[in-house]
Amino acid sequence: MRAIINSVIRTAAVLSFAAAQTVTAATPQELLANMERSARAADAAFDGFSPKRGEQFFKSTHGGEWSCASCHTSRPANPGQHAKTARVIPALAPAANAQRFTDAAKVEKWFKRNCNDVIGRACTAREQGDVLAYLMTVQP
Amino acid sequence: MSVRRYSCASAAVALSLLCVTAAHAGEDRGYAASNPTWSSECGTCHMPYPPQLLAPEAWAKIMRSLGRHFGTDASIDAAAEKEISAFLQRQSAGAKRRKADPQTMRITETAWFKRKHDELAPEVWKRPAVKSASNCAACHTEAERGIYSEHAVRVPR
Image (cartoon, rainbow over all chains, first blue to last red; front, side, top):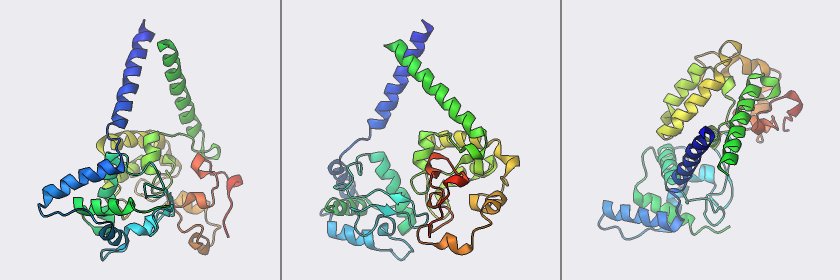
């Protein structure tokens, strides 16, 4: 009896863990739509994302030492390499790597960290959307 | 069905205990202990370094300052931070007297690391295939599996 109760508790824990893991699952298109809503809320004059602006943003060092491309390469359909540690970074473009931009929490986490590293502040929704719009145009 | 699930869970617990035991058995047998949160969160920008190579105090300091982590923002959410901190404390508990100075936050600056690598010319660390002393796997071919034995060392030219 005790084994069964334990088993039920364990199964429930596994299921709720699985639910927590999938709760942020999304497609790049859905994440882009979320960014668009935020960008519009921040600026009534927002007139859509621009892959071209995103590419410029991605490849610029913004007056600092690194650009996004320093680690993700200027051809983000290719695997990158961490600028400091040489650790291989799987390709960032969704067309080259189906796992990219499918987890809202992960996307939020990495924009927070990497924007801090590259431009020294958080990226705006427009900047994030421009970059994602650019990455969605990159083909392997 | 539910009973079988229970046995699987027990087997997993037993296996993880085995891994922890192996990790405490000493560096020659490798650093086999693992934790999925630790290996994914700490293993993206660099390889997940063996917790045994720093003192618990140093790990605590590192975990408190992830927002400014050796020049980058490595902040993580509170749940992951708690889980990884506990794992690091557990795994590094025996490291204090053996090799790690509590103040040293860089593995490459511990006396132990320097002694182990003192035969290498400074030039070796700068080779393109090595790039940095933080790139363990450049020479330790089985580092990803926690194995740092001299038999598995190939220094790239």
